[in-house]
Amino acid sequence: MIIDGHNDLVLHRWRGEPTQHLDLDAARDAGFAGGFFALYIPSPRVPDPTEIPYAVPLPAPIPHEEAARIAEELFAELCALPVVRATSADDFRDGQVTAIVHMEGAEPIAADLSNLEEWYDRGLRSIGLVWSRSNDFAEGVPFRFPSSPDIGAGLTAAGRELVQACNRLGILVDVSHLNEAGFWEVAGLSDAPLVATHSNAHALCAASRNLLDTQLDAIRDSNGIVGVNFAVTFLREDGSLVPETPISEIVRHIDYLVERMGIDHVAFGSDFDGAVVPEELGGAAGLPKLVAALQAAGYDDAAVAKITHENWLRVLRATWRDARRSRAPSGSAPARRPG
Ligand code: ZN
Image 1 (cartoon, rainbow, N blue to C red):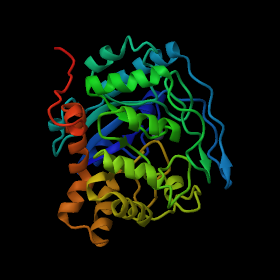
Image 2: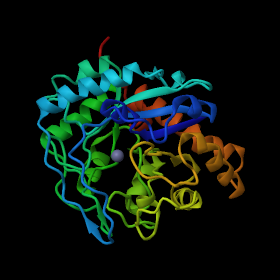
Image 3: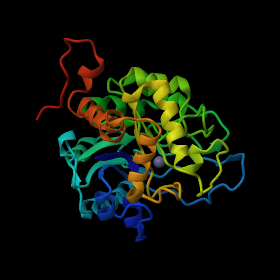
Image 4: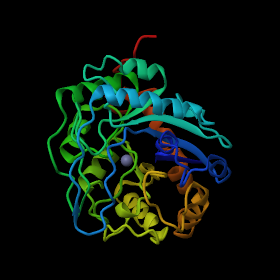
């Protein structure tokens, strides 16, 4: 069974475009059991950078009302997919595709959080405070190479409220796309495991979207997880957009993250349908090739099971059902929303 940290299939459906990487039937046959399905409000497209170094400015903010309207359309597309929507880690099963409703950028949430519980009731279980642009809650990290993720200010007061509300409700807070200042504020505030659904090791690829060793250590210490992003621009040491990048580049990041954080804190976060991934992999139907590459690199069955699904399931259980118990001192009762 393979659980994955990020895909943009819903955006493709909303745009009326065919999927590039996620034919759901072929994916299921390849062992793909689903994962995080992003509701992403698109910014106007900018061409992919063709030169290194690059520094893409942050796109303009998207007003809440506009984002909320588009989010309704995106959510309808997700609901029309032949998938089970997850509200429990037990919803993931072999032979079916299960979707975690994930908001990539919290613009559809009102700054006073007045519609957050409504979204929770509709199945929202994961929020990235920002995509790579600013909003009422935080500042995203701009796409730059080479660059530290330490660009811009941290969370707003509303952002801090949102993190605490997510903890209270049991909504996962995703730090991918957040700048470094925001990351450390989430790390200090959140009582759930820290999660980067689709990011890589900055030590191996110095893109601003990747995680510094100090961030990886904080994620490990929170019993959290990093989903390795298959985007070639976040894998390659030179940061270039080269589709011929081999699967071994994914394994290189997994090796590094396992070495730094331990086997319990590494998983997949493909970015299928949202990025250029290695041609050799192709898409979700090629996932068995990645599993074979891990086995060839020396990962035994127990290690492969952790990377492919067990780590995600542990983090989901800790975050959705028992966020407080996982990090707070023993004896403190988890504060749950009534009803
Ligand atoms: Zn993303």
